[in-house]
Amino acid sequence: MKKKIIMLVAFVLIIVAVFAGCKPAEDTATSGEDTKATKETESKTEEQGEEAEVFQSRTIKFLSIWDHEDPNSNAWLLNELSKEYAETVEGFSLEVEYVDITSIDQKVTILMSSNDLPEIVTYESGVRLKAVIDSGQIIDVDKTFTELGIRDCLDDGAVSLLTTLVDGKGLYDVPLGLNVEGYWYNKALFEQAGITKVPETWDEFMSVCDTLKSAGITPIVQGGADKWPMTRVLNSYVVRSIGLDALANAMSGEAHFTDPEYVAAAQMFADMASKEYFAVGMNTIDYGTAASMLMNGQAAILYNGSWFTGNLNNTEDNTAGPEGIGFFNVPLVDDSSTLGDYSMNCGNILMFSADKYDEAVGDWMKYVFPKLGDFAMQTQGSFKGFSISEMPEDTTYYTQLVADALKGATGSFLWFEAKMDSETSTLAQDNIASLYTGEMTPEEYMQQLEDSATRNR
Image (cartoon, rainbow, N blue to C red; front, side, top):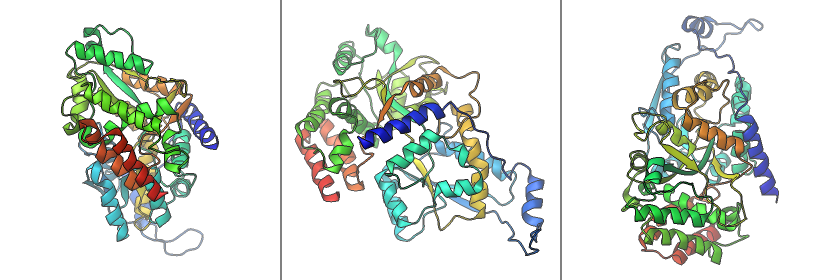
């Protein structure tokens, strides 16, 4: 009951806070001449007459899972704002190292073993982040942002979610999204198949898939090569058939992955695969290709998050057009949840090395993060978990879909791996392809998760 209350409070805050603006704190990098004069020529403090430390900018390293040249990515946002910052601060550069999302955990583990995390690191909030917090290798964001005078640029709802995900340990990361998740669909393909209503129940959802398949249309595509997009579909049925706390209960031992209802959820996923509701070879299709297949009409439905609006708002990417893709929440199985309950998250997060943090990093933070919310909305039409001072007058159809979902959310649930330890999370993702192909039975899939969860409790 306590967990449910915490999560409900968190997302009430999201609904209120996402539309509340906050003016960026004044930064020290808006004027090149003023900045240089302030930081490089002052050699004594006014009150104490002591020699002040001369500010020296430098290269800041960013370990990223996104291509910084992709205008739809989070790395692009940070890189563009960093370019602006570099125009005012001599000697600054942001060095981006790309790591595939499937390798980021291993990369971070190796770097932590030698206490050599770079200044900025992409990671995942939740159980994995808790271990990093306990290691003492990352900064306390709440404390640091407060000292820098930019704490109010973080959306209150996102902060509440992030602290809940680490069981109240504190705020040691910043969000890169304020997302709802669900099923996006190609309107033209639905119309072609004669489907006039989006499904609200799981039975209706399966009927829609049958109708699409009968019309020669691939019902669902997911980026199976990236693994997590397939576990999101499994999670859809787990949560709607068992309850919002289904995964948390299984990880804590209050319930078990081998309980009949959990195995039944894995069976549903396997049945959808055997009925050919999924794209052929889906376990080899990457995330970007899956998104393109939805937009160009090669598949009718894609489970994704509201970060997808970056692609949808890009007229070159989205050949379906400015209103050609629709959205519906995860359909209901029973009355254990409602359509007001959304899967919600703050995306992959950023954490910052405590060892590498210095005045240069703090100065960069003061410039970039107060601007991030507005910049993301203006350039991508996306919510990033940072306060937005003013919504654009020309908000796109896709951005408005997300805003409406956030506004209408009354409760929430987490993604499949949110409460899993690293070993269990890896098993869940690595084995989902075998469940899809039939090489692993639903019982075997859930048994492996149960064995791992038991070892790591």
